[in-house]
Amino acid sequence: MAILDDLSGYEFEDLMEDVFRHLGYENVRQSRRTADEGRDILMEEVVDGTRRAVVVECKHTATVSRPVIQKLHSAAATYDYDGPVRGMVATTGRFTDPAREYARQLGAGDGGVELLDGQDLRAIGEEIGMDLYNGRIEILCTETLQPVHPTAGRDAPVFEAVREIDNLEAVTIPTPETTVSLEPMVTVRATTDATFETSVGVIHRIDETNDLVVHAARDAPAVATGDLRDLVATPTAPRIDLEDAALEATFDGVERKRFGQTETAYKEWAIDRLRQAQTTTVHYTGGNNVDYEKTCTPAHSDISVQEIDPVYVPHVRSLLSLGSYEYEYSYYAAGPSRATTTNELHGCVHCETAGPNESYTYCANCGSINCDDHIETERLEGEPVCHGCAVTERFAFKTKYFSDEANLEAFREQYDEMSVLEKAQENVPLAVGAVLALLVVTLLIASSVGGL
Image (cartoon, rainbow, N blue to C red; front, side, top):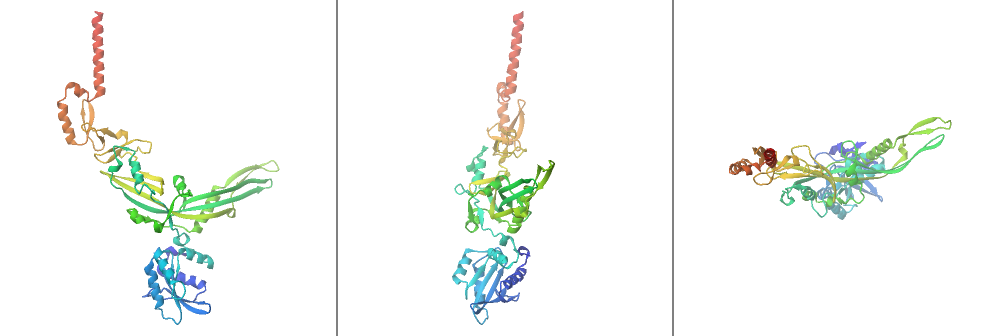
């Protein structure tokens, strides 16, 4: 078994030498490993009675572009051989469209160049009975779910979240820094058809089809659930080709993670997972009227994998800077649909209050987002100010909140010039209590006078 991802470039050439020998090419050998002039493997083939040399370039890389094809074509054209010569490029990854177009113009016959990408190597491995395992070979995925709302734009989810925050206008916020990580997912569709019998007949039967959506990064596979599963499993979820995505022009940073297993490995893992999940204990009564129980586990052969569908899922991460704070809003995207993973815009910076059902207010003084328990009205300007940045002082036995020392000092001067009644009104409950107390005293006095 060759784990191609773990091979060096030279080890990949060694492997491909074996592959070509199994395919029936003759005189297969490697060129010298110094100044190879673009020739990694040299071999011969006989086609319609004519012997022809084949010059091979091996590229253990994710993408092969047009210059590689041009270099190989030149190396084949200058190869000293008494007869026709053609070229071949074998890669674990894929070829760019310009590379394919250039090779198409050259043709695959005498003087031409044949291209073998990861999918071709997988098919060759199956043909010759060799296990060619590699994330790009066994799973060569060229599609991603649409990372951006087709009409609203890249940062629409952030603006939508901001609109639910009091005192913060979406039009006033700075453009967030938004990056995307393309995370590999595999949907495995499998049908289970299992019948369990005893001497009394059929006691249990399974006849169902399941779609397992699997996280497919390098760590151990894990089943996706909830909103993410629904996002990936939806047949109408919009997809785009990675070549046409223009991701680098849309996002501030792009990362594409690797598939961690092979299609075969995910298939076997899904079958094992379904066997575990569908195992059940059945109680039944035998012909002798004795109660029995039997653990029913589907056999490996009872489960048939109908389809393995790989796709990248965009995990979009936006960082919004407001004053002294930075907020993250992250989600998995599929066009207009999304599954939110982090939403720091709907949470209080001073406590654990968070969630879409709470109300929040923005403090323009420091940039904080606050729950109702940590936001006050600035006494002098009437604007919201949070507990974290406010300057406080008690007036009329009540704490007042100010955006800075200058506002506090300005209010002190106003307070000193207020009448006693105006000062009392700075603490309405206290003022009301004082009025009520005065009324009670007045009533008591009146009652006493009347009694006399």
